[in-house]
Amino acid sequence: MINQNVFLLRIIYSKQHLVLMEERIHLFVVGTAGCGKSYFTKAFSEYLDFKRIDHAIVNLDPGADFLPYSADVDVREWFTTADVMERYRVGPNGAQIISADLIATKIGDIIDELDLYSAEYVIVDTPGQMELFTFRTSSEIIINEFGKDSCISIYLFDPVISQRASGFISMVFMYSSSVFRLRIPQIPALSKIDMLPEHVVDKIIEWSKDIDTLYSDIMRERDLSGDLFHMMREAGLIRPLVPVSSITGFGMDDVYEMIQDTFYSGEDLESMKY
Image (tube, rainbow, N blue to C red):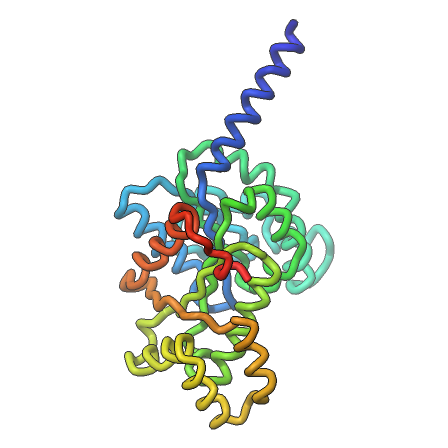
């Protein structure tokens, strides 16, 4: 009888766990090193606080020396890259790669801690080096364990690199690789717009919306073949950016509305995935 009761309790816990997972929205913050992922995480958390929306923050970067926010679940509770360097006798780069794979082994513990919070949103701050998350199998494991249908990503375009048409195109390539690898809805955003003059921000946003203008500027720089550009155009890889600032909070409303539309509008939003 005791064993039967334990079995029933496990079934009840599993069903409650699934309900919790289905009710949460998991937002992955992705982008190249220095694009402002951690500060966006902080800013969007403050935005949700303002709207009185329960949420939790997960830090998946075991190499972070400083975080501008207080993580509710932090992978550094289990290991850091310094720990990995010492244990496996590898350098910083090797430790980052090993750490990226080790994160997946802790996903059960991460979910258990998240279940302690009544969070409608979970903001996931991914490792500084984008490839450590998007290009590793661990990202697929983490997303599947969270529940793929509950996951969305915001990809932050680096504002400094994006100032030139050729740099903007390189960001498009990186964004596209994230789309293909993660295979969840993604919101492309221009980060740190407070760092750029208004006319530069306007030009970058125009490139993301007006393909002909981008093509003219690319050809002027002569940094990309016309055939490759048209391939990107036909594949629909160039998409309108949402300008955001973690300093002023600009654009957080737009990001929130796009997330809500993705999960609750009932519209066909496959275009956000592929």
